[in-house]
Length: 144
Length: 173
Image (cartoon, rainbow over all chains, first blue to last red; front, side, top):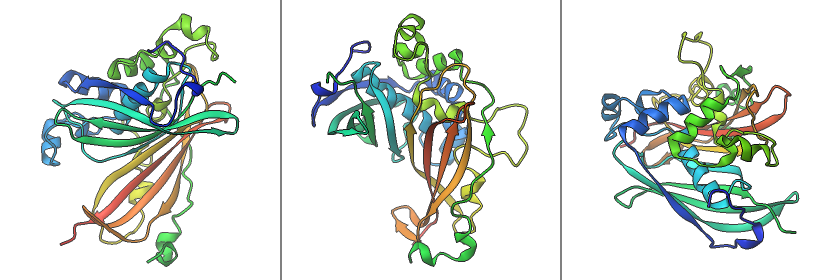
């Protein structure tokens, strides 16, 4: 929906946040290092990744933050504001994986006059494994 | 063991603040566009001049999640040794916690308070926020060490924070 406006009044607990997917090609791994500026070898060096017990280079936390941020505003439209994002590190997301982020609204509330929702966001890979279970707080415009 | 029982040489680290570190580049449109390419983010506030001009912001803004990227140290020329990594700083690794040779990132939480616009100069300061009692979890036994980065713009406005939790541990039988 990208350019549409999602109003706070139009969502409720359980409202689903539609899935978005990305293929972690070698090309995207390189784009990730350049765009995040996180050049720790785990994020791009296959030998380093293998020696660390990973099947291949794993994307950085900043990459996942960007991916989840996109998942949120693809749903909310540009008037939605990501206020907070908690990202626990669990299973690495490696080159060759296809990752899909989706979520749902878990709570609807007002804070200092700001209309907000809390959301659970999950990243799963092509094997159906949940690699990330994140929480987001999003501000939405109100019709009030 | 509670936090109160941490030895004094460990406790003295809690609440310490680093000096300020400034990002190598001001917030800028090319880096914003590279970020959007990376995750295929079509949010028009980030890349559509016309849309952004007519929005509540009056112009392009940075994705909020780029907070850490704006202060990531330059790749070249090499930095002086006392400049730290924005994610895993000596702040967390220097604390004398005994025999805990391994570390693993546990979580990162971003709070996004104000929009960042092209031309903004972002700097940050790190607080060693807390050290957990000794705990045993799946991968080993050790302490969770939490740092908070506070990010400011050139007007000294707090634009956001990131809380980074690192587990420093040893393997257990």
